[in-house]
Image (cartoon, helix red, strand yellow):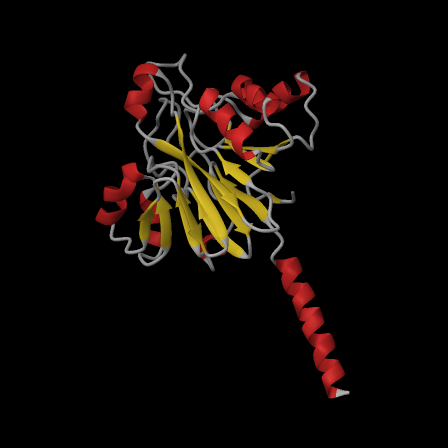
Length: 275
């Protein structure tokens, strides 16, 4: 009888663990994401400052323009890995530098190796191409943070592709405009999930040159996304982002994009992920 009860308890515990480890993505704010994937908690592009902590980038309001709507402990507790696409303040800020443990595992692009060394993160690892972390394969791909002179000004940025047995393949695009390189990446990896920064950000003096995808470019992405579900973030948190959730939603409706094809995440919203 004791052995039978032990077996039932073990089965129930295994079922509960399987349920609790279901993959999901949660938008904290802007491009800061909590990804639960392959049984691990991953924090992506942490901008953890309170509202108005740093300068305006468009002469409209100090950034971030909204506060984080969830407890900081809920964001940082049990994080095993931090992925940083690049070190602009809206993707890794002073607050993240001070709040995150200096021993936390960070994966960063080659252009930011010196940055993380200088900040004292002892487990920061520069990813050139592809690596295995625990049970997850992580590939880094380049993005173009603008075009022409603006691209030179904005510097290097990266995206990450995550895959694991039994999990959906996820393409986190980072700060990038739509181009042939992005299309080629999608055709090559055939992701199940694409996370796109759709805020249409611009910089002063170059208002006609987007530095991330706007609503028009996001529609081009959707049309080339294959089977992937597209998740749009990086809106309504910075004063230089001209594509709001409302603007993107109107473009989605105009182009008759189904709600299950493109999801516009709200702050704190959690979306379960599947293949």
